[in-house]
Length: 199
Image (cartoon, rainbow, N blue to C red; front, side, top):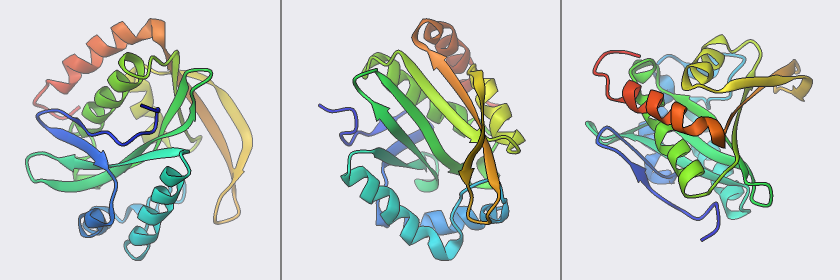
């Protein structure tokens, strides 16, 4: 089994399954919830771009540079967002979790925490990673706060790291969780994921 072979990761509340065009209609509804594509510092697709974004991620999957997931809410059976394993480096046992977006109505409900618990458990306990990275825009305060709530630590800021579609330059904040931190992070996330209230 290679790092980017298709897998399904699931718990009682959320399931991560290989992204597919069958998720299209749910994801159009999801991106319309909060008009996420209008946030200039994120990369959520607009409703007319969802099919192309699914295909883009699947092409990267076929090239073995990404493993894209649809985030399925178990209660409704609907796709509520996307996430990926990306920038996999098997030789150095590192992977990035990224290209994540969730419909507005499930943000701060624990869905992201539960997804990350599934992915981090797979990364550290099946893939035997020594580090898992997270990257986000300097101005994406919500994403940065979410990454920090997971227990990731800021490694540094890559300045003028990417040219965005609107021509602005992205300063990229790079975070990571390393293997020695995983037991404490897992205990923290397991506790948070079990909470019924908004987190």
